[in-house]
Image (cartoon, rainbow, N blue to C red; front, side):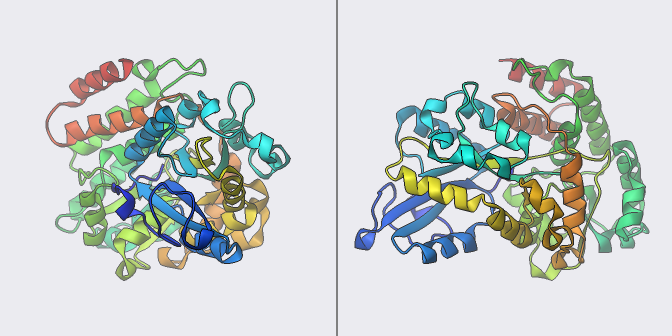
Length: 418
């Protein structure tokens, strides 16, 4: 999941290759207009320009909304068979919800998808298959997990900055919190160890053997001891003064990057684009990337779907297939850091050996492809995205002093059971 601040309406169509009337299927000069609905930075800006240049009969624009609003709006559009973009991104936390109504989407297997399935990791392909075998989406990225950290802030607090030495500080989340307590003893004024409890908690949840649901789609978060232990650990970190108390992908969180208010942030591969966008060029080289406590885990990853309500289905399918092809996923990894879901790229030297100059030449190619090879994906139930939002709000109540940890947990469990 790569949430982003809310953008609304036709006037807010972002990164448009050519901008024309919202909802129309033809553009000036008789060209076909395609829209793509996204949330966050998918790294598609240059790719859409490239595709439009190679297909002069097509004009493309993208519209971007916040993570939650994007998926709520998509559900509403599908219910009325009106208003959806020609291509709609769906996060892994919501794909089970949408694949339960495959009749709302084009079955990509009927458009050649069955000939492309071997591109993807098997679990990625299967993740968007409906129970009756219809394929509603082509896989974009997967999340993977790492920690991004500010080298200068750790050094100022007397901690090592070398990425291998930093990783040795936190083989477990308990030791991550212990390192944070040492950091706070000498931290620069106003700087905290991590950005906010929800971000850390999402990583811990992503490493659990069972998440919010069991495989029968029963919500089990209330009895999930792994997640409750993670909750208690993060609450302790918050109460120990380690958190900047910022909720990810909010304006104040973005400002936190610009002002250097925290030293570490949970870093699925797609997070790197967010950091670069928000921290700006002046922070280049100050950020670095190293392994995550606990090893492995996943947070996020998406699919491109084609709603049946679209007016230009064949051209939309063609664009979705092109954007998710190996060549384009490789370009997105190098430009935005999004980890490909195509296993053959994990052996490609141009990917494996890639180092990101913004992040102090961190070997992100090896770091994230190694993580991808070890990844054992967690089952996601129909409303996993909504539950993630709810648990983040619950942690925010603790951070804001509105509830203690136990009361907020009980409210969260009660809310999701409804």
